[in-house]
Figure 1 (cartoon, rainbow, N blue to C red):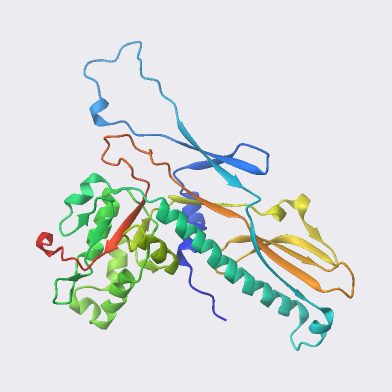
Figure 2: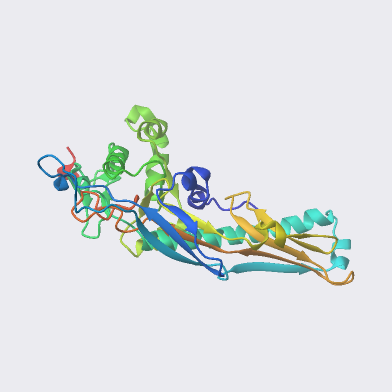
Length: 334
């Protein structure tokens, strides 16, 4: 049974994303509902530069900004199953291999559950594009701050040979670094069809695009569904713009168990790297084995005021929506 490709979730959980976070979380409480405080700063506008020489006093105070997110470590979801020793005796498969395979089936479903959760947060927390993105030739930025691009030009069906350059330019102007562009299938279809049209011979080769523009699109059905509600098909997810908060009760060594009838530990998804709690328990030798896999996660994004009012980056969160549209933007193409 092949697992579904969950490239977005795998990226969000990766060290590249988490290690590159623009905001840093701090656990500030010991209760079951742990507030997570993020600390950040705003850049100074060029209009704030004062004329003349600075003196020995000023009225301008300087401090960091903070935002607190509540993360409930009791807001958990699980999948469980039981299997009797008699049933295990009747299987041709080695017992531990049978149980491991059934655990993996539940990890696969929980991965998809978490991926859907992440998609909902991302679609609800989109930020802005830099105001200068509207000046890119052949694109449009909607009133809802969604970047519109064409994959094909007009009614001729000709590919928009500068599509990836337009997206890369928008990412650069908005200071969205690294990351992925994920969501609906239009960008993936565009990229894959480059091969069916003789690749570089037609002027749009996928390998060359990825090397030059630094990204290749990722299909994510959960994001595609969630983004449709906000008028987008895809989203640019900058490195460190969406941070996973994952709590596992048995990550703490004190809480772990490992004896002949009780196992309580953490387990990691081989597909995404997501961490889960796992319990394997049998109270009596003739009782069923009971196995449960539990997830407790949330995702946070950068604060809305990472940049000051009036900044060209006002509302930028390194997380911005894209709509691949059939509306002809060709008049601005050249």
